[in-house]
Amino acid sequence: MTLRNAYMTDELDAIYQQTVEFVDKEVKPHGEEWEEAGKVPRDVLAKMGELGMFSLRVPEEHGGLGLGYVASAVFAEALGSSTFAGFDVTCLVHTDMSSPHLINSGNQEQFDRYLPGILAGTHIMAVGVSEPDAGSDVAGIRSTAVKDGDGWRINGTKLYITNGVYGDTVIMAARTDPESKYGISMFLVDQGTEGFSVGKKLKKHGWLSSDTAELIFEDCWVPEENLLGTEHRGFYETMKNFQNERMVLVGMGVGAAQAAIDLTNEYCQERGAFGGKLFDLGAIRQRMGMNQAKIDAARASMYHAAWLGDQGVDNVKEMSAIKAWGCEVVNEVMYDCVQFHGGIGYMSESAIDRMARDARILPIGGGATEVMLEEVAKRSYS
Image 1: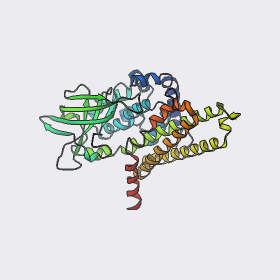
Image 2: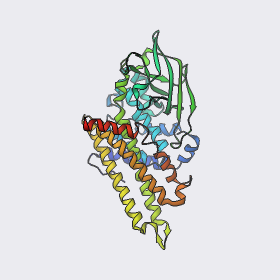
Image 3: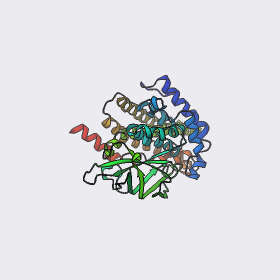
Image 4: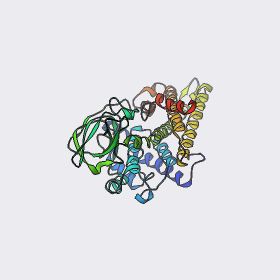
């Protein structure tokens, strides 16, 4: 389908169509294999780089298209049509959750070192913020980085890091000023750096085709040129990208929910029951109609929040609201889609079973629903 909203342009529509065609050809036929392997093949990511899919948010002066929030929303929704959310998030962590920190805070030497590979899909990025006791609470980070000669000595553990096993560089946040709650800095740490290791590859409920890791830093030394942005300002620099991160999670969820609705409607129109087809039953038609209305509303709210961001308007309230409500709605839709598939919907061989499992993380990752609602409340009643 072609997206229908007030923010689309011919360029954005072309991005959507190209991405949907790519996942139809390159992802859907192979996704089950990637689920078993627990990773997306690097040659697939390189193909996406060749097609320019990783250049949307990179400024033109650095070889990208220089587009904004709405472009990322389009890309995320198109990826969601793949029905393999582990693939979706592998891409979106690279493009919209980690690389923007480099673009927002990096210097020319760092751009020259990393951006060509990022754009080409040959150098895959991860972001290391979450810890055993610090997820949405960035100020609670306990990992430390201490000045050591002409570099920094890093110690700590990161948890639930997507692309952490097979990615090439992690942008990690560590406490550099113990006297300040917000005294955090960001660092570029490459795989293979002495003292940096993958503790274990984590087993998950869903997103099986993405790799998720515990990362361990034991006296890991990085040179001064690997400091990203301003010393002690990493908390504020990290927060700059949170709305974008939340948005693409909603986007991939909306895309997946639309695919689930389409699959379920098709199944119900073919499945014989009570002398006719399941879709002949008004209870099913109406409930699926309501599901479509909910997803249309979530999509519209997401694009509105994205558009506000592109206008330079503070969109924390709007983006937090759609992250909270939209991700819950995606799970409501998935519940009905499993229900209307009946027994086959509970079988691991069905796409809808996988999609429902994948959707469950959306109200947790990138800011839990409860955290998002607090953001909305603070801006609504204070």
